[in-house]
Image 1: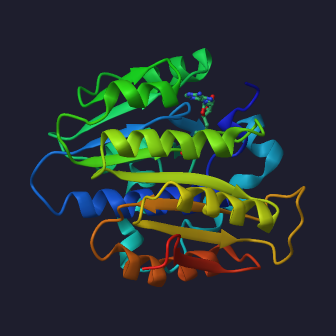
Image 2: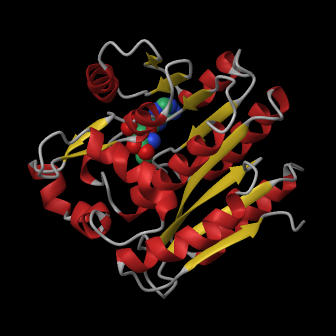
Length: 276
Ligand SMILES: C[S@@+](CC[C@H](N)C(=O)[O-])C[C@H]1O[C@@H](n2cnc3c(N)ncnc32)[C@H](O)[C@@H]1O
């Protein structure tokens, strides 16, 4: 486990994933009933992008740094407000990871369950979450945790599966985890992040997801490079299982605007994994 998200915090992949995460949470808030967010690979929670790690890669500058003050659709306002919340000073110094972002948007009655396997990252996450009573942090394997935590007592909410994809078998693990989790909790919303390097790998991932037999899977993709170079992160995707009502239309409007603000080549797609 060498991966440390601090090097990548707020990059284009985070922007894309977190913007969609915020849209899903905002939809969940349309109903009064409480919901749970279960984050299987939560990371450290808060990232100081003025530090040497983030500065070394420069990924933040090409990611959130590009869109911080861009003219964007109103639907993205909650996402940017959540980033502003962890930056009380005027200058942009911190970027929130998925657990902090979720908490910034959640209500007092909603609940966050965050799993992080790396001890240093889990410790940092506990520190970042402070005494927030809505949140629990588990230093454990996020895939195994799904068995313990699903279905959540609220019976509504979102599971985010966002592994580092360091291991070649990670894709298959994600698909298996989704199939098992969905069998335990078929009505939950699931968001699965994946890298796009070779196009053929991304297509294979979709084929494996289709083979689970789960019908309502919406794949959202962004490409920052036009080519199909397997050694490079050309883009990334997020598959949303059981996407909330009307979010497809919002994504079709918002993602191209986000892509344009990020000034990437390539483009965006929103497609059903199993055609409707
Ligand atoms: C891509 S980062 C997560 C970023 C975070 N979800 C966000 O959006 O801010 C992946 C994290 O998963 C952790 N990790 C790796 N394998 C894990 C496992 N089996 N269970 C839980 N966490 C794991 C890594 O230490 C790393 O912090």
